Length: 84
Image 1 (cartoon, helix red, strand yellow):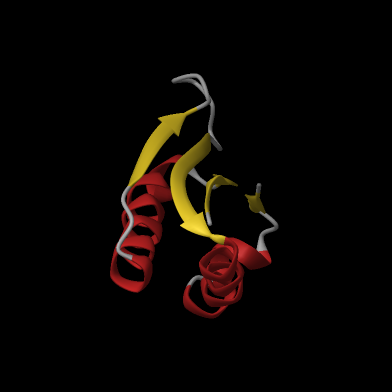
Image 2 (cartoon, rainbow, N blue to C red; image 1 turned 60 degrees about the vertical axis):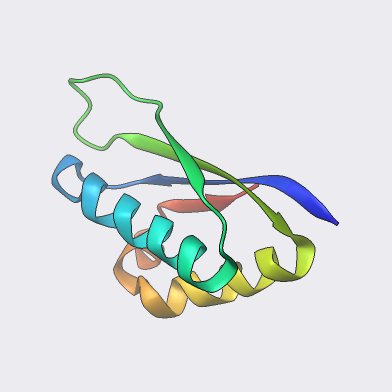
């Protein structure tokens, strides 16, 4: 069964686009799912909050949670990512 999921992350403004593209690429390449992106911050925020919305199965979501720390360790080590 597929469920609505989201990943929320914060990072320095200059890295928002690269991290967003990498996560979208991981979701597409590994799970053939697309995602929507929402910027939850203000233009003046130095560390914006970004949300990505997508639909995957529980198994796929679990695999994604294991893959992201391996593929994007800098983002994860800063404590800037949440899974919902």
